[in-house]
Image (cartoon, rainbow, N blue to C red; front, side):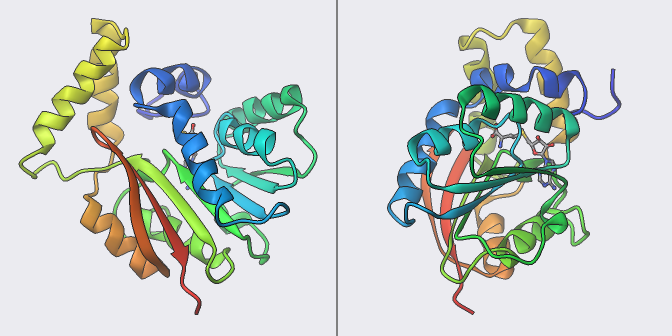
Length: 235
Ligand SMILES: C[S@@+](CC[C@H](N)C(=O)[O-])C[C@H]1O[C@@H](n2cnc3c(N)ncnc32)[C@H](O)[C@@H]1O
């Protein structure tokens, strides 16, 4: 077993998507919701950056509906990118798709017309360092054209807030209702405690603002998951 609570290059990454479908309320629908939001703001040839491409589910969902979009996925996990490559190939949507092993720091200087970042930022510490949440958001903003939309989806919450315990308990109960057994739930709970870096909605908005995003609107909330759409400030 890996020392990392969420090891995307190990067993966790291998079984990630199956788990995500169980534990994330509206997982599959979340990508279609992002597509619906982005479609209203983008043209048919838009260049879209997918940060934390994972198993390629966002890319395949977007490409199947908008074949003219040019998608660049970045992910530091070789295993996840391999799964994504396979999935993109199988879906026959590889034209106009680039998958890059790394993070936004590894991209060249070109600017995208939109970006998404789903289920990534909650793994990063809320500190000013290169691997922290603020650096992730600032790096994404740097690669977006002025006015470009950005969709962020992730776990959030302040463990000291009055509603946190109830929502957290309901989320774990939701996992049980979705069919996750006692042992698996206990293991998952241990990973959450060890590897999720919580941030409140207010803190997320503050970091978005500091990164150079404006007009952040929350379009989704279910238990501890939230979705926001913002746009890159014009300057
Ligand atoms: C939970 S998966 C999410 C994958 C996909 N977006 C989804 O929602 O199914 C998180 C992914 O983020 C990647 N990741 C971790 N740190 C990252 C970073 N700094 N920049 C980009 N991706 C990162 C991991 O390797 C992993 O593939």
